[in-house]
Length: 129
Image 1 (tube, helix red, strand yellow):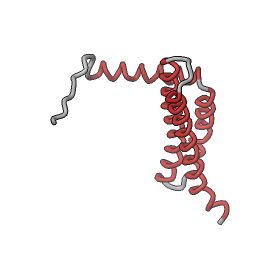
Image 2 (cartoon, helix red, strand yellow):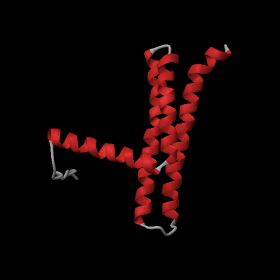
Image 3 (tube, one colour):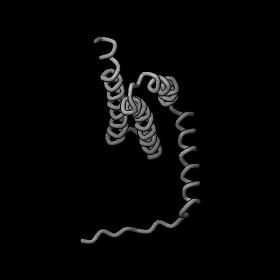
């Protein structure tokens, strides 16, 4: 069976890019205002990204240290989106709502473990050995 794609109506080209940029800005602002964890992660990133540039001994190390730091914020944004949709559906408790929220939380936890292990793998050998 041949897959069909539906052309979505709307803007194209530069006007679509401008709109997408504005939607992204609004999403960042909403998450900053409503999610304490995101504010903490951004604050930490403000400290850690310059530290990564300073401590990374190569471009690859710097990219890894910065990349995993930003990945935590990306996963937090996605988790916040899932939570907003679940809350929009309704305030009543439902097993699927719990699974959705718990899974988003688990994704954040795994991204934090990835962050910690990446920083440790790169920096600890210098301080231990």
